[in-house]
Length: 121
Image 1 (cartoon, rainbow, N blue to C red):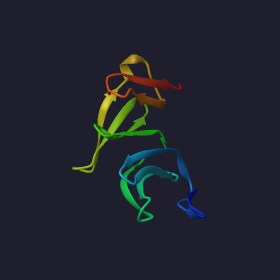
Image 2 (cartoon, helix red, strand yellow):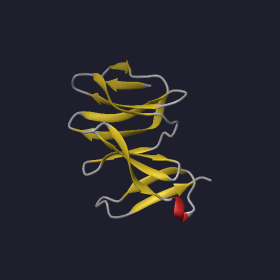
Image 3 (cartoon, rainbow, N blue to C red):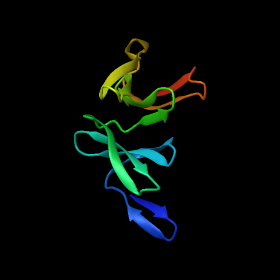
Image 4 (spheres, rainbow, N blue to C red):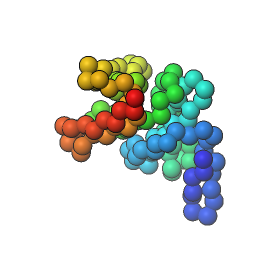
């Protein structure tokens, strides 16, 4: 994956996930997948430097970021939230009882009151 800076491109990573999200300030969040996990990193466009934010042993690529709840990702029928203070993933919602088996896309509205979930079972 390349990122453009004026007239020069910078190589950022191999095997990026399909999502890139604005983080805060001059930062954006992206994921790098390997055979068993996804590493979530933030990139500082001013310093032109990438640092690890979180890691999850999973191949699920979908994630969103918002100021209120931070990093969230899908895992099977669950939505997980990364607790950056404790550096752990916690279950935010479990949609198993709704018949959902694998969330492939999800989004929250701008007020965090509604959620759209795509199930690909």
